[in-house]
Length: 467
Ligand code: MN
Ligand code: MN
Image 1 (cartoon, helix red, strand yellow):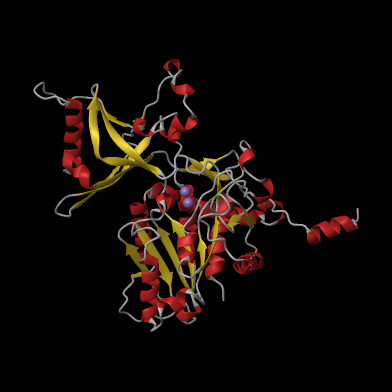
Image 2 (cartoon, rainbow, N blue to C red):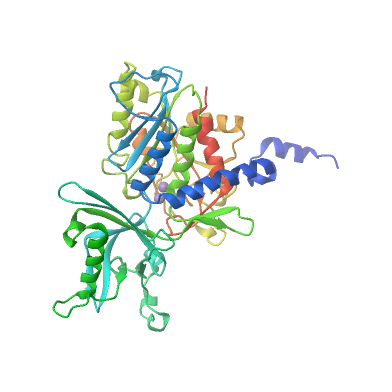
C-alpha cells in the first residue's frame, strides 16, 4: 500500500525517540555494542572505588603512551598526557592540532558511587559478635543494603605516611560481609515504619566476625580476634582506623541481565557507565583537531565538594597550566571550551511510571540521553544548557548517526537531582549533561542497556572527533 499523505507528513514533521534496534542500529552494530560492553564488565569487576579506578585508568593510560602532565613542558599535537588529582580523580588528555585558544572538548564523569563508609572508630563487639559502624555516602535507600554480600575496600594510612591497601570480598575465595535484617516473624513494628526508616542509619552495622580469641583473661574477645587477624594480614591496630578510608560496597560481580543478555546488572553504574566510555574515547581518539580532555572526578555523590570534586579549582588549574604550555591564558581557553557532563539519568521504569512524564523521560535502548537541565523545584541548581549548545550536540550526534534521546530526571516536582555541570559552567565553559539511562539508580545493583553504553561511547568519541 502506498504511503498516505498523513503518514508521509508524520514521518517528516513528528519526532518520537525509538528503540535503537527498530531502524537505527543494524545487527552488526548491536554486536559491536555487546563487544564493547564485555570490556566494560571487566572494568566494573576490576575497579569499584574512586581510588581503584584512578589506578586502573592510570595504568591503562601509561600502557597507551600517556605521560604524566608537566606544566613546564612544551606539547604538540598528538601528545597524550594524564594528571592524577590526589589519588581520587584523573585527567586524560590528547593534544589537538588546533590552537589551544580554540578551546578544548571535555567529557567529565564521576567515579565515586553511593556506598557505606566505615566510621572513624568502627569496630565493636556486642553479644559476642563483632561489627563495623558505618555512615552512608551519597543518596541511598538504606533498606536495600541489608542481607546482601558486601566487600571492604580502601586504604589505611599510618602516622608515618605508610599506606596499606585493603580489598576483602572480591575474590571468589574471599569471605564477604553482611548487614542483617529482622525476620518477618518479629518485624511487625518495623514494618509499620515509613520505608525511609525501614532500616535506619545506625542500623547499618556490618557483621565481621563471631569467634573469640582463645583466652579467658580479657573481655571483647571476638573483637580482639578480628583485630588480631587484621594485624596479622595488614599490620594495623585499632587506632589506625582513625586515619583510614574504608568503604563497604556490594560484593557481587557485574553480569548480563535478561534472556536476551541486552542489559548489564552491577554495582556503581552511576557513574562508571559514563566514566568508562569517556576514558575509552580519550584512549582511542587519533590526532584530534581540538585538544580533548576526559576527567574522572570524585565526590559528585556528596555534592562535588572537596579538592577531588569538581567544585574545587583543580579543573581550572589544569586548563590554565595547559594553556600556559602554549603561552595562552586559561580563561581564553575555558571560554571557548565545550563539555559533555557525562552522567546518568533515570530510565523510565514500567513498574513505577507515576514519577515520570512519559514524553520527556529517557528509556533504556533508546540511546545516550541528553539532559538539558537537572535540578529540582523549577530547575533550581541546574546550569540549563543553551539552545545553541543543544543544537550543536544534536548536530554532531545526528551527523554521526549516534543513537540519542532527551530525558528529564522525573516529572516536575517529583524530585530531582544534580550533576557536575554547574561547576563546569561556573568557569564559563559551555556544558550539557549527556549519559546513560539507568534503572534502579543508586541501588546496590543497578541496570543499564548495552546499546546505551555503546551509544555513550560513540557520543564521546564523535565529540572528541569534531573538526
Ligand atoms: Mn551520577
Ligand atoms: Mn548518583
